[in-house]
Amino acid sequence: MSGVELEERGSGPKALDIPIVLICAAVDLFVSGYFSGDRFETIFDTVLPHWPTVALITLGYGVLAWRRAAPWLTFLVILGIGLVGGVLLTLFQPIVGVALALYAVARRSPARRANPALVLAAFLSLNNARTATGVTDESGLFGLVVIACIFMAVLTVVWALGRRERRTRFRAAEEQQRLKTSAEESLGLQRQQIARDLHDILSHSMSAMILQSAGAKAVSSKLDSTSEAKQVTEALAAIESTGAESMRELHRLLGLLRTQDGDDASVARLSLADVGPLITATRHGGLMVEVHREGTPQPLDPSVDLAAYHMVQESLTNAMKHAGRGAVVDVYETWEPGELSLQVRSARGLAEGATPTVTTPGSGTGLWGLRERVELAGGSFESGRVEGGFVTSAVLPVRASSSGSGTTTPASTDEPASAAPASSTTAPATTAPPATGTPEAPGPAPTAHPDSGAASTGPSPHRTNGAATAPEEGS
Image 1 (tube, helix red, strand yellow):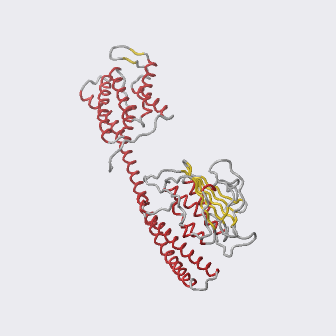
Image 2: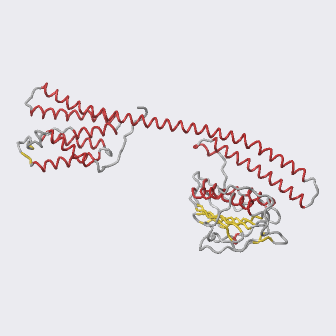
């Protein structure tokens, strides 16, 4: 065996130990002749009562039930019972109980404890040989040595079986560890191969898309200054910005694939503080996004921070896909002691019965994946249709970052005012939905002001009735 041997601790007494203890005591008493009519005579020429003495010895053997949890202590107690009983009683020759305790020590203890146990067992062999030679009237030294060797041979075989079982278990554990290490290495190679394949498949095509959109934007900017031309230019700028952000996220994912599990601290992770570019891209896509914040931002655990980011990202993506241009999206961020509440509410921007000019296909699994991510982070998630729109809500626990320098979301999380269209304004913190209390009925759908284009919102609940049971939008 390689490495440091450790003592193997097992469980305590089991129901099976009761018959084992009774069998060991019965065999030792039978070998000693106490079940064939012999009396319990002591070296002081006194006779002990038969059945009380049998019960007392059996009770002492009950310590064998703890041989798995404390093998060395159990062996010492049983050895003491055997030596004391063998000295005081003229016919007592215990062997089975000591052999079972010796096997437990050899199987569960390192060599520094198992080897001394075998040496101590030699004293019991000598005492049993002395008792046996006294019974058979063979008082010579030769008979004493022969019988002692027989007892010792039995105990040595039992001890060797225990050591062999221990070596077998160690070899099995080492082989299992080797297979686990090999599997981890193979998994690492597969992750690197996946990273290379993703880079080869996506990186070139996405780079070409970004370059072509940038070139088209440069051409469209030189055309006439009509409102349609401006919309085309803005759409091309949004495509370029979204493509660049997707490339950055792809590189982060490739970095995670290439990084071993214990070394991913250097890989940049997304957090709630990074939602500004998402809001900017959504506004360029024709949606009016308002951010409402209440409470004091606190550091979040990295997994919670990532879940919060994806909560806002998935909700904005759904709004772009299903609400249409001109939709109003309200992002409510409420900080409370011990938790962060996020809600994204969107209202359709197209006229009733109209359909978007471009339909983005969805897999229908985005919200399910988001629910799983939020629940894995220790939070709760709800989503569903409400009157005039769709709502997604998440409540996440606030935990201090393990690194001691958690990412704090500042009050100015959304993008600078210059990056947003002039028609978008941030509503005051007083319009944030209530963080606690009974869910209210959803308020009227937000509408765009005909003159200024600023979004005016009605009262928006933090949670909506029936959101969990309503059908979810695909993403």
